[in-house]
Image 1 (cartoon, rainbow, N blue to C red):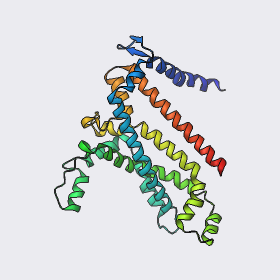
Image 2 (tube, rainbow, N blue to C red):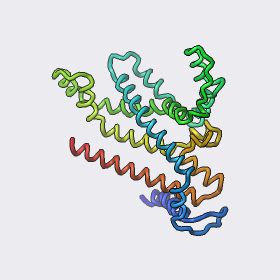
Image 3 (cartoon, rainbow, N blue to C red):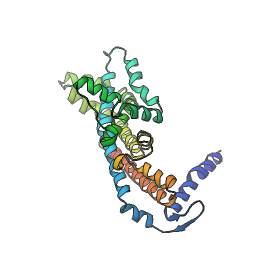
Image 4 (cartoon, one colour):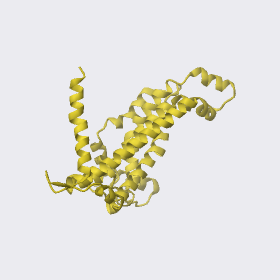
Length: 281
């Protein structure tokens, strides 16, 4: 009974991985023509300024996603978990709904919203400030623009995870802490956070992996390029450019393996940290 699954796994997972490993050690010359170069592609990556810039941009975007998006998602979950909030179900649906929109649609929408002269963002700033604001979001402030777009689309998605975790917080412990004189902040750190720590760790890991694989949002918002001076170039965008625009599949495979190793390392670290936290608890 396992044979069909094992066959599909071998054909669509193990075989592509093996071919990607072979390509990473090759220099390609069009379809079917390649020569082995060993670890030369990986050595070239370490000295490639565009790859290093893509890594920098991706890390900055990831930090923005984790340290801005996740606290905002947790704050919204705590707010909408209160029983005294009226129409909680509607608010949850409204906040979560952007996650149902496709990445291509949201990218095109924010490309229009953040346009320099007629974008909705600058029109709102004009109304609020009363001046003619032509803020060049997609020319000089690409990473903040990408972070704003991702906040709109994924904050509600992460909020749902936190809401599910908050349902499992024991109310008797919260009540006992309240009777002992613990304020809201102390109840959050001493009761709520230990209860939702496994889910929070999972959400952090999920956000990091998704952010490190960023592609559609900048690719569409910046019209298939990395933007001025490649300020919006990400690792996966650079992989796409090398593999499908330049035809250098070997170099692209090396980029993919570097990204895969980084993500696997992050997953191992997160699992280790979560395991130590649960053992300590």
